Image 1 (cartoon, helix red, strand yellow):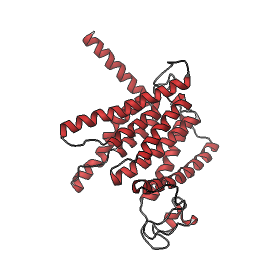
Image 2 (image 1 turned 90 degrees about the vertical axis):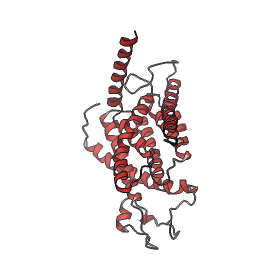
Image 3 (image 1 turned 90 degrees about the horizontal axis):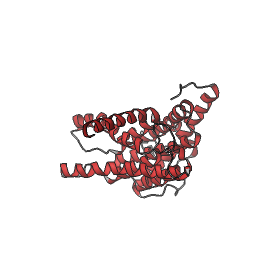
Image 4 (image 1 turned 45 degrees about the vertical axis):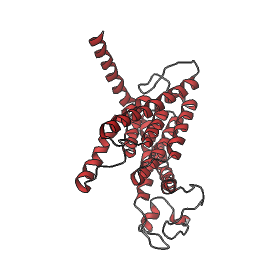
Length: 298
């Protein structure tokens, strides 16, 4: 990855990216609250207080700022506003900014790919927040994301086709767009299939559901956007994030049941940001493993 050197125009654009990311986060909050309750994200168009039902004024709907000015309370009924709202807005802004700085400025990734990664980040934020509260990942997120990932592979074949460590193919059919779609499909099958296999094994061992089918679809979405190597790395990195949450949960609340979607999402974001470096290490280990197998059985 190239050295990160940010110019003055890029600093100004970074501020714009963060602000726009916070605005996207504001919309994601709408999705997070409405989707698991079976409500449309479009109707009613204006956000409303969950307690009193009053529409939220435009001046009270400014990301981050309004929460501070209102001191975390609804202007009409005084009901407390969940801290999730500013956290989602800030997290989305920081994710979009990180993508821009690391992938676009530092890595020279083409603009279309960075936008596709930004879309994936937005979907992961929604999936994680809903899963944390309801232990479900909405199909509207994962299935839309799966189709979006396949479309990205077709329209942005550079996500999957090339000579970089993270690429799936160099060439196959001679049609770059078709190769991109094939790479995306391979990623979806690898990501979803890997989780499905471990879910079945876990259920056989523990005699209860170890991972939900929502996790399968979530990882299929990740693989469709970023390829099979990123999906595999994500799956094996996610448990480390889970331990950071699960151990305190077990000690403090004596609970051992927790959603896995947020940790898959965290792993996906980490590997996405460090895509080429992480996959470079992955390729070397795969090569070493192949040589070891040949030495033993060859």
